[in-house]
Image (cartoon, rainbow, N blue to C red; front, side, top):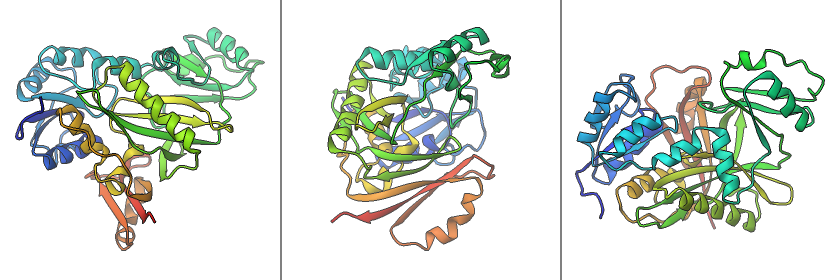
Length: 358
């Protein structure tokens, strides 16, 4: 049964993704309440109400549950205990199992391998001795990452030809937290698939985007990706398998490495709307944000077909100064996030240039 028009959707997290979800919800006739400790957050500027409190505050969670017909979230580091407490009172989508899997890189890759989706080789690392053994297993090279909380290239260190040592104190320098060493992957390009699954188990997947990162932050997403049709279909099929295995409801972003032979290695699952899906605002009738609201509200999923080729580019820090010039361009859609201060590495907005398909 679908959510009645005028119902309230709770959103945990008040960043730009929450903002765009709130806008999409309003277009479909829903109200939104945002749980976010930061005052005047991007989402609160467009939502109907903000609960200003930590994400794990019991009173705030109780208020959110009482105010909402369904609750969703905009980032994957929502405390699992908080999501579970909410789920006992009100439907929470995506399910808490998706959070448990995505919040820990070892759990994530173990899950993917368990459902037949290949990843880079990996080993858990908890101390320098385990790091030495893991580097030895990977011929002295790999990417050391925090298992939890890393994003946009943060919490990472690259090792090349380090079998002889030289890494004492590394784990302490990274905060003495659980780590993972991932082997290097020789890949041709990076792609991602945005897909959705409804309460009725229907699945809709968008075309894969080809992504370019700078300093660990997504720079551009280009459609169509320079991949074979069978590679694109394999990526969509893998995303569908992930959705089914998690009994998922909502939008997911799945990142892949494309190897020289066209085969795929999954890199990461994001149990939410995703930066690499922002292009859907301009190049599809139904954006990833509307698709997510449709899914969690029990509405039919929209058509994910792309009507235009496009390139989406993030505006990072002082890139926001380009806005007047960008607005003078034809066939360009701009979306700013309402952030007052531009800082290095901070996502201030994005734009998408479209080109009509023949």
